[in-house]
Image (tube, rainbow, N blue to C red; front, top):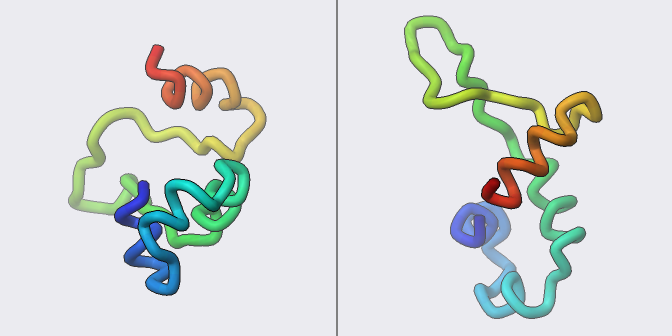
Length: 68
């Protein structure tokens, strides 16, 4: 996640992303980045794709993020 943020926001230093930016702000910054759509024709997506922004998928997203 840090590498992707550094690529998208080159004005951030790795130290600023790791130690000065809160998790909530990191999520907000990353929410405006373009997302990958695994349902493209002719390409297979890896794994199950869920929309973590959808409240119906809240439990599934929490399970993935907590590593359960």
